[in-house]
Length: 111
Image 1 (cartoon, rainbow, N blue to C red):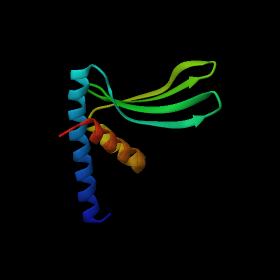
Image 2: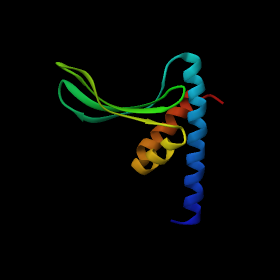
Image 3: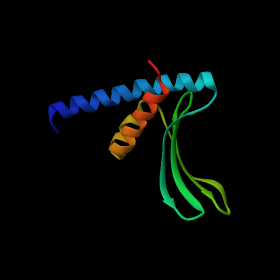
Image 4: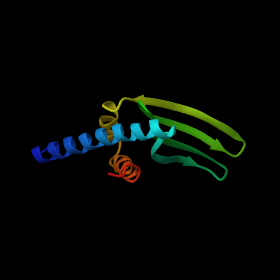
């Protein structure tokens, strides 16, 4: 990895951490979590398995939920991250999801 890439990655992660903190203030004031992304994992005609990431007052919560059809909504997995942990996890996981998080936060947070 080049020095420029390390610097860019550090800047992106720093920006994401700051945006997460600002989103947590919004979540605290409004009483509702800020959605970072919704990602469909699997979908059939009547049901879906979806990953949803949200920011609440203190944490980033990533949940895998099955819903639709005759299936009552159920949580398959749940991950809870601090604002320091989440940027590392999402950056290693997917550039697309990282980009979606930043886009969502930019829409939610008006400078």
